[in-house]
Amino acid sequence: MFDINKGHNGEILLSGRFDATHVDRVRAELQTLTTSCTVDFSNLDYISSAGMGILLGTQKRLAGAGHSLKLVNLNRHIREIFRIAGFDNVFSIE
Amino acid sequence: MLRSFKRDLSSLEPLFDFTGEFASAERLDEPVVFAMNLAVEELFTNMVKYGGGDDAVSVGLDVRDNDLVIELVHSGADEFDPTSTVPADITRPLEERRPGGMGLLLVRSMMDTIAYEHRDGDACVTLTKRLGRRAGGA
Image 1 (cartoon, rainbow over the protein chains, first blue to last red):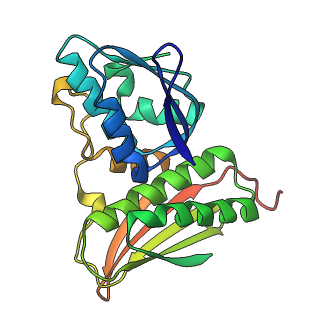
Image 2 (image 1 turned 120 degrees about the horizontal axis):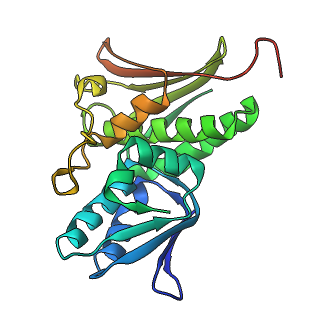
Image 3 (image 1 turned 180 degrees about the vertical axis):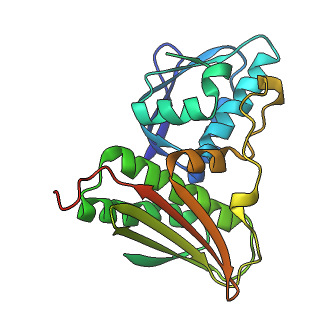
């Protein structure tokens, strides 16, 4: 079960298991972003490289316009694979 | 446990059900389950994207000598060695980063061994991860 929603403050809320079958849905949602945004991982249990590639692509696109994604509330497993992938150098992670 | 899956991304849901069944039966720890799911997804999606061959991939999960052993076999597949691909270069600045190679980088980091063999026309990838259990302990 995976879901993506907008929070009350415009943040992106991810929940469940973000595997390769959900890439198109998330890409479509993130493509609408034109300014900096927070992505809240509070209820996300799992992500693979397919989803990480979408986040990376969005960060590159936003950075070109002086904006960025901020990633918050990652569980320890996701935080670890983001560290392995060097995401702590290209994202603000809280 | 051994099960065959249609070589399509729609198989990820039943594939995760399968790893979940195995994790419950073996009482695997949460970090091991996360690593197992990640490794299985990354290698299975690789087999979906590349390799031709049959429309099914068999996935075997086992615990042997305190090692989690994962084996994916794609019958009739072209020779494609995922262990020889170049992992993502995470030292590159954002504008030069590419998503390619990230999955294999994660698999190599999360698992202890990864081996590829093209055997009798089948592409076989075997992964192991040492479990933190004491011998003979529960």
